[in-house]
Length: 212
Image 1 (tube, rainbow, N blue to C red):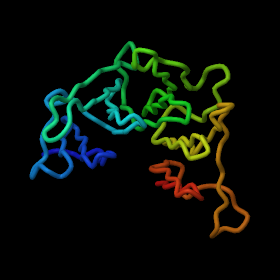
Image 2 (image 1 turned 90 degrees about the horizontal axis):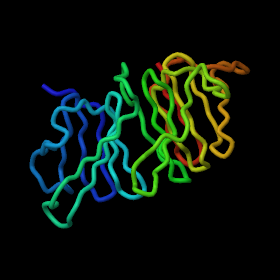
Image 3 (image 1 turned 180 degrees about the vertical axis):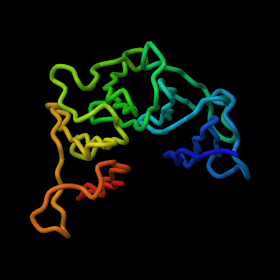
Image 4 (image 1 turned 45 degrees about the vertical axis):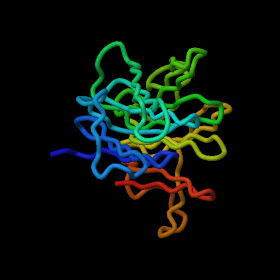
């Protein structure tokens, strides 16, 4: 029995299914069943993200993986996995979300370790550019337990937390502020129905926040 953590349909129409015991793949709907990816057969994959170059990023407990499809047509010649460890020691919790900003940097949220900005270097590998962890100087994000992140079309990063609602930052200045929505059913009242943020979505005009 598998627990499905997330599903991604990439730009080419391939389906990626992340589970607690590995990654499964269906190429453009051409396979009747999901094929397990041997390179990720024991990893607990918590989140998936496709960057603008078409790379598939996997969030795991304390590390990132990048999956590259090599070859063309059906089937692909090879699936290549590159592994990048985020922390020198194993961290409790897992990567909860990955996003790419307009400058090409990756932002990685972790359940217990805060928020990390990664730069893709000249060799194509991610390296730490800055971490946003409380408490530390000049870090004004509310807490280290980040449940989800979204980078909208204006390059504003929205970070949902487990206990303190949403923080947001314009990535030009990278200063976080708490977000207090106006509750439409309580005129004049600012706040949330719940402080545990489960999802953040951009519909092109509005930011939607799901809470529990």
